[in-house]
Image: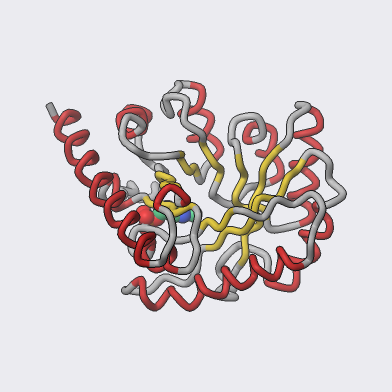
Length: 242
Ligand SMILES: *Cc1c(COP(=O)(O)O)cnc(C)c1O
């Protein structure tokens, strides 16, 4: 019973989010189908993830290698794509490549080279996004804008990687409108990257906007919004053991 109730509630949440996404797209003169809904499902059980996969969610976003492996190997995404959106350590690359259709959180040459090496070993083309620390916060991962050009230049030489665009987690605000100026900066960065006319990079993706800010992100050109809480409810983190 509890699960059936959760599914009904998730279905309502997703329907509302899709409607709001479509309205924001139209208001910005964009087509609703240009914007993908990524369900950020960290901490949710495989049962919840697979129930949500029946809803009009386009893809999943995982933050932790182990949750990705568990959900992927259990078939919890029901065949929908999954992207890796969390901080990735090089020693976990092996298990992420081959499961995640895109790694959104590439922020160093070192990590990019580790992903290239594993993609070559598995003989596949790995889509990636470059994560930008757009708020220049010392506590956050992501490349700063200068390092971004080095990453884009470097990626041209890595034959098993294809850069699809940029990802950001801007500073948190109480109100999505305050995030908008960071989303605008991201749109401008992607435009600048396109002007550099890379041969191999296919710069068609801008992943930005979360539960409290996805409308502002769509207004500034997001093509993927990553939504967790607004779909699944608040996350519960058990207290850390002493
Ligand atoms: C958790 C998470 C989200 C979703 O956050 P909500 O506020 O729950 O919507 C989006 N992106 C990343 C990288 C996350 O870790």
